[in-house]
Image (cartoon, rainbow, N blue to C red; front, side):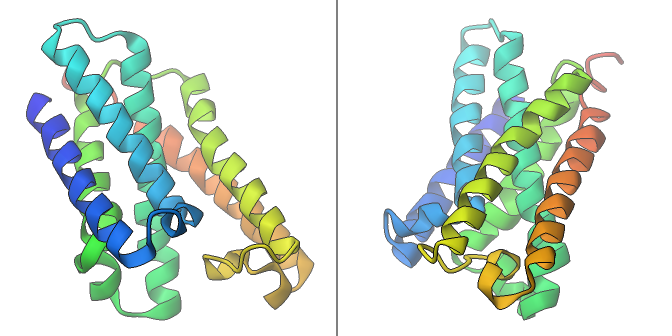
Length: 192
């Protein structure tokens, strides 16, 4: 587990450097990808510190689980929506910060789950809150034309209103489904 935390932290720092170069310091924060990955960075650092102190509270493990849920949403939206929409899988998964933020760090985080304590159903609900809040904020900013996108399904003026509602509901439901599925992985190595 220690090595997974270190690998996540290293990957997140590399992704941060590429992301700043690509989007600028503030420009990157319009993307869910960056929010989810920086939450994962913070969670991995906290978890690593707790491991080194030989005392890992349940809240640190819960935070790592929630961050993993968020980056898994990032990974799956990239693979299932953005790549089919735009093409260029190599650009999304292998170049610049995408290699770390879309692919490696989410997969490393998923690899951590079996080492965590089992999570409760309400933890899966907690894991949806950041995605829900991000969606409300970005759809609102798009509606008032303060932001354009950054994802095609968030461009409320480029699609009928009901499609924006449908996308929002679909993504929130998918985030909950992902959290419930990842919850099943938690604790598998602890009980063996």
